[in-house]
Structure formats: C-alpha cells, structure tokens
Image (cartoon, rainbow, N blue to C red; front, side, top):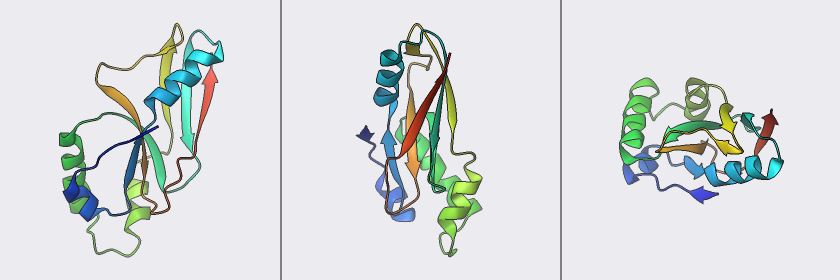
Length: 128
C-alpha cells in the first residue's frame, strides 16, 4: 500500500482526506489466489471510505477539489459524510484475466478516506 501525495490545496480544503494506492496489494492477492479469470470485488467497511479505479495524477485531484467545494461548501458541519455519500458506493469491481488485473495503462486502484482516523481496512473478494 502506497500513500498518494495529495496536492496542498486539497489537503487544506479537506484535511481529513487521505488516499492510498492499493493496486499492488490487489494485484498480489489476485496473482496468489490461483483463480485464473474473474472479477475482483473491493470493499471498505468504513462509511467514510471508498475504493475507486482512477488515474493517479494531479489534475484529477484539482478537479475533485473544485467539484467538492462547489457541491458541498467547506463550512458545513457534516461535510465528510455528505462527500462520502456523493462520491458513490464504497466498493469497486475490477475484472482480471490470466491472474492479472484488467486496468488501463495509467489506472490505479485508490482507497479514499475522509476519516481523520484513516484505517486502511478493505476486503478483496474474487469471483471466478
């Protein structure tokens, strides 16, 4: 698991946000499973965390910051819960073939947490 550096402006706007790149961990889990092809289901138990397949680049985080500030202003009391709700379900599904994830060249699997007590708790379930 690798911590992703979030641009300073986003860290200032969302101080509770942490992002972890779990792609290598998921790839290792798929490769070691012995399952040749199927779908990897990734899920997080925390209501303030979610898993997303996304390109890991600064422009994405800048766009995310702009969107979130427009939709849910920073002064709202329960902002993290509203953001987690708007960002969608906490899970992601990734197909795999020949024991390898089917991701685009620049795509990564990212674990987003809006909880200041970030716990990298996620589960991997393989269906194949």
